[in-house]
Length: 441
Image 1 (spheres, rainbow, N blue to C red):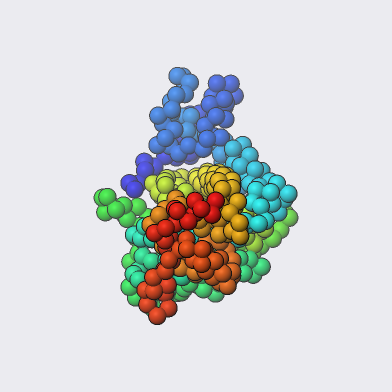
Image 2 (cartoon, rainbow, N blue to C red; image 1 turned 90 degrees about the vertical axis):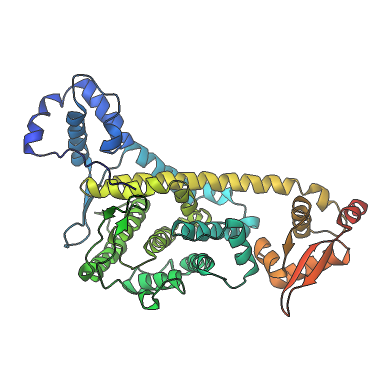
């Protein structure tokens, strides 16, 4: 990710050159249009604008408008932590829609039926754990990672360990949602995220103690961001905890805005030697859960980020280069959440359609709905193998229920087993699966 071109600066001298355009109707319309889209300079300078004004002049008018309408935030007395953000119409609309759908309203309760909430939650946590780890370099495939998590087998390499740690940590966040954010809780989350994955175990669960950490463009080797000096990390992290925990009617900040700023700050500071991105995304989830946005648990934000990692990096750089205007990052985060929410609804629609296709299997005498799912999976994937533990996790039932269902199918001759070792037994469809199924139907 190359460093983008720095935008023109608004100062006393440049201000004088644009004042006579302020009341121009065409300029006002262009300013309103591009402010709502909140483009960065390198994107804006290629857009069509009124021909009597230059891109530099209109940019300065945009900056003036943004500055007058922005909220100012002083996170810390340490230099570099005076932030601003601007609530565009698009941002306000997205926040309204998220308030309707992600919190404890009737509409959000109806998105996921109560009978399947646990099953969907397990899938979501797995997807988030896998994608968040892949963003940080984990190379395990999604299919293999899900298999590991559902079978609850031990990770066999660093990539799997990263995914397992992410999965374990995300599951833990829900139990922490009523706690205040503290230095200790942040270090605990980092420790959970990075266990057995760092080259030096002494870096787990502690802030970095040196300044030899840089964010580098992988293509060019260019340093694109130099994080905060380590001597200030403890103070700034405490200031962030105070900012997050502060509740005031006079200085209300929308929880999603606040969570997005928290996410940005952890990446911006880079308080750890490694694991900053994973920790930042975990804290984002935790804060929204603490504010009763319960549906966020079912959404994989990292999977959407993984589809556009360049834009994720750009959102950080645009913010830093444009006077710590964190609107760029908020905009990206809201677009990502919107995609994640749509993806969740598509996933639920697929599951409803899958359930409707179970009709032929559910007609078989003595076959319950859970067993019909297993039969459907085996019909779709004849080479599928599974353990009782995997079915327990996949169907979100207790071990005994999963065992009873599997042994019932085995008794009908639909399954066979292979003992891999003293503890592990793999089940798979029998050679006569198709014939027996036809007779039962």
